[in-house]
Image 1 (spheres, rainbow, N blue to C red):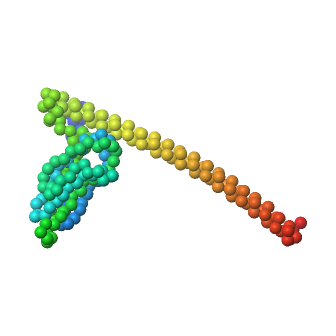
Image 2: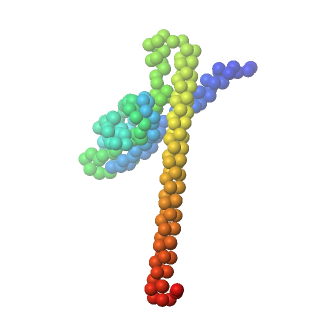
Image 3: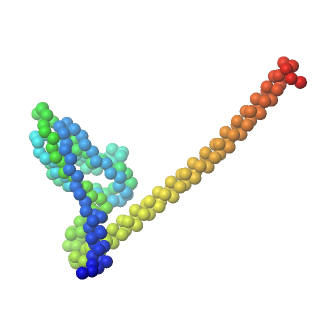
Length: 206
């Protein structure tokens, strides 16, 4: 049986956005962070769960300037969400703090971080707008297409910015090289004239 292009596209879409959660071990009195670069005006959601081992684990989400976007003391299980205001590096940190002294065993931390269309809850959208399953998938594909177009536009803008920077740097280096050559040429001419006068004064040459 032949598969329609729509079904193939849906399979590709599901493969691309098969998000795997992160699991890692957090030792006693240890800090572990996850850093990610995210574009402007992007929805970011996270779900976490920390294994209980009798110690306290704090969770903080910050940007590169140290602004706290989400904070939870004694984080055990929960969710968080925020929308980025500008293109930046964002950091999710878990800090294990001892309680009552002693060293506890490592605990397992589960973190599922999504952003962009991955973070959208299409089930809620379908309920709110009363969309059929096919319409929901079409909405997903539309958002995916827009996300790809936006990424290409951003990459194109970055490429133009880098090209302008390279051209500006090349021009400055060229002018500096010309200036250096003129300085060296002037210095060499001055040295020749100075030595010629010096030798004439000493009557070593005529």
